[in-house]
Length: 378
Image 1 (cartoon, rainbow, N blue to C red):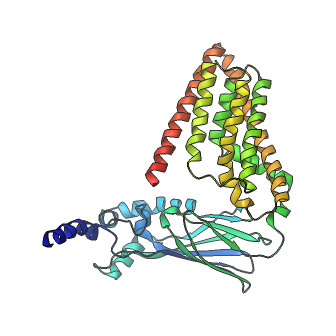
Image 2 (cartoon, helix red, strand yellow):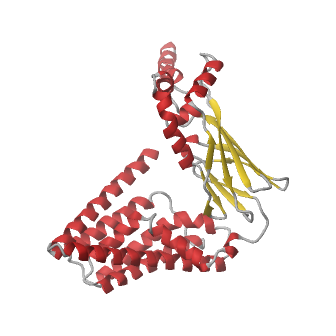
Image 3 (cartoon, helix red, strand yellow):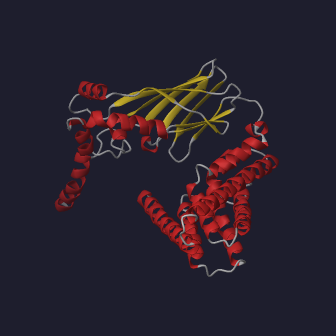
């Protein structure tokens, strides 16, 4: 029995020595005043954030290296500010709202606060970051996302005396805060704003989507054939996107991202080999479009879940028209660039095959990178 106890103590001792001695969840208070200024104060463990660890997981040795290695803490402040600002997302009725970072702890303030806590209790160092944003006057719902490395953030958001919500916002489930009782956001969106939203999901945000369109263009015998494949691809991803948005399918998880990269690699490889028939090259974009539609759904379904089916249909039509216009822009731009390159005297077949092979390598490489990222989070 004594030997068992000693073995257990030996296994536990490194954890006691190296783990965070006392961690606390981050907290947040947000107030929207009568001028629609949203003031947000986030209280969090700054050293663990700066080393990129959840407060409960931050090792003492990493925290000590940050705090006591000359110059390291000061050098980490500006990247920390940028990471904090980039990870804090705000949407007002589905539209992004920009934050202004008013204050962020300095190296001197962090060291001073840790010193006041004493040697035994130098961690965690809980300090405030303050931000402001201007919220549109007719906003009905806010969606708030915090940097993942903060973990769960206990949030208290208030607008006047009418609306107040207290909730725990996790990194996987962004907080939704109702701050109005007017008409649903869908009723105020026009076809053209929805079209712009769909266009933006491809240009400039969907670089992987653009690569797939490039592969379809390079494997086509004519510009008309490439545009036809683009339309078939849009019809394919419209099916799965609509199915998720209407609740007929579950919301896809992160596993869909490696499959999207796989479709890029396979599409470019097929174009490189040039052995597929025209009919096959119509079926392939349709099938691959089903996969890409699930990727779109991950971003769109959260915004549509509270709207009625009639609004969802209208929204998806506008969104998909925008996607198709962006795909056409990618194809026409690719055609123009290819024409310019061919004017230099290079052979068209050689140029097309070289580009196809490059896109295939990128697609398979991104797939491997995404698989490794998902495996690392499991």
